[in-house]
Image 1 (cartoon, rainbow over the protein chains, first blue to last red):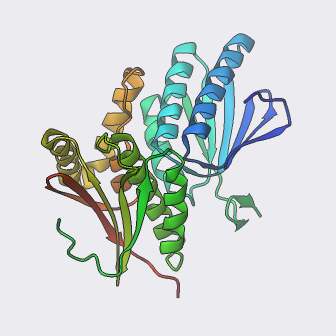
Image 2 (cartoon, rainbow over the protein chains, first blue to last red; image 1 turned 90 degrees about the vertical axis):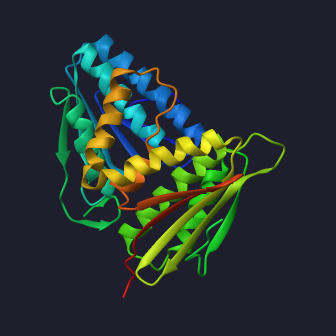
Length: 132
Length: 165
């Protein structure tokens, strides 16, 4: 999966869009080995780009990412570890109405509090994952 | 095999191929379609994690099936049951130990989950994430139990079930 700025890409039920050079938007579900492999590769590429650009902050909007399996949680752990070593911050915008966002992202933040920033979007939604 | 409480269980045979997790997810969504979004989310998590474990760790033999996943709603309780054949009693014992550790953690499951994430954070080369059962309890609110009657291993996950009015 190669990302072009502003172009939405789909891998099975996972949608990915690099909205800005330092803003990634994720949506849908991530549960199959194919999507997992693409997702891990995508995160490695993004990390390399962030380091190369010497960006201090990279934002990830996961509000529309409804479901992930444990392999994706591990991919987030690995990304946080790499960001922590490289010295840039990851800011996740989450939807607290989704249980795994509410519970797992707070634990992910506790792994590296100086690296991870959480922004909980509590705005009302007209349907799952879509802002009102 | 203890099938107590199986009731009107819907069962899916999990094929030994990776996209079978998607079959399991669709099966789960149908089985609990009348439940609240929170309950559906929890069951989807359980079925996907247990299904993936079946495919990864089921006994290596010529069978085309990795095991079965069952979902039942019994009044205020929803149950997800995974059954598979294991190669050796030691494999089953290892799973039983993990289930026991998680079950005994009670309200401390968040700390157990966090401890595992710290291990992964500090050791990126660890071969297995082993987060599935932890997430089922921490995020899904399930209680876990495990029984082994050679060669069949059963993991049972139960939680309160909310129904739509």
